[in-house]
Image (cartoon, rainbow, N blue to C red; front, side, top):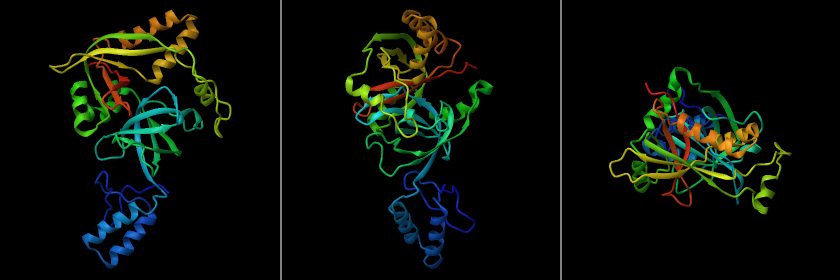
Length: 317
């Protein structure tokens, strides 16, 4: 049953212990709240009820709504084929970051598959996704729903409404936040994008990885092969910090991998595909008239090492 975001009239709100905002999770919990507080409406019992509901098995979970800003190209590892998804919550009093991991994107049904800047809803599973990255939650992907698309009208104004409150001064500032509070997601304007570095990599998956990519599922019994992108793309840039020595970070956005595959097919050669990649990600996304923002996130096993997760690129006003 979907949680209610506000209690009925006359019923005190229940506090979500993480966000400290009024929330009642289900009608069942509303009834429990009424029964207990009708006889003993004290502050102590209010907090006891919070504890009881939070620890009662969480059979219905917490529902989370977010605007997707990041969707990485699939990675293949011990947990299978997974995609890093991150975005900004649309169901909280103020925007806040959230990362969904793991997401077996290619195993989702067609109706569940989403794009960047879709608003999706998903239940948070009981087991946490990561103790080292506070924005991360483990989604119950069976509950995932696409709700709507946030369009680009008005120079991406509807999207920027959620992004703007989270913009930080620089990548160097992001590193300080990570050291202080373990923050692992951020968005900022690079001061100068110097280059797009393209490095040749492995063209094929290893045997164990290949076996994982070929595993079907109930919803996707015959998946297409997942191509190993034979190049690594990196932004070299300087951020707006007086002591910045420059940054060089790998781009993991699904869009750059998809563009490489599409343009190689269209133009028959990797050389032309790479030229178009360079033009798009430098001359278009980082052009002087573009208000370029980088979405960045760190790596679970290397928390001080950040990746460029995607680019937000409306026109400058």
